[in-house]
Image (cartoon, rainbow, N blue to C red):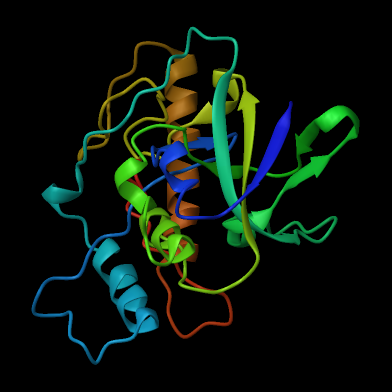
Length: 230
């Protein structure tokens, strides 16, 4: 896997699209926005982020968004991951709670590297409206990806990965070629392999919900919808 690291700037943001996938891991997205009655000048970014977690925990029809499908016929697709320069501690088994914003790519020689844990990713597309020209591009990316509004030394790692190693974190299906996640859970499957893949995705979604829907804990919660976009 060839990797390339870029610093975050308002001029670089346009090159990266906020999509929706997860490399043996990865999701891209935008956090649910608060209603006009909930947003006031008195609320801090931390307060608004806390509200977004609570909003994400209640499923709504409006959360069924149009998604960017990936081309599964390609041998490799280009992805990016947004993280601080701080790396995940070696041998840390609690990766589910910590992979957002934490570096999980171990660089090797020749500009190559290996993903050490399941890693949240986005695809380079549609990002021109995400944070290009933003006063605070890091905050803009954090908001779109459903991450806590925290400062730090943030970078984007760009790399290529085989489509078979990517899944979409939908409760209905991990299919990366789908254009949206369903609001209902499937009861019929085309094959045993498909059933196993869907059940594995549902187990992942359950863990994400259980570990994301929390406030006032040492580790941050996340506005995870299970609908493939955050």
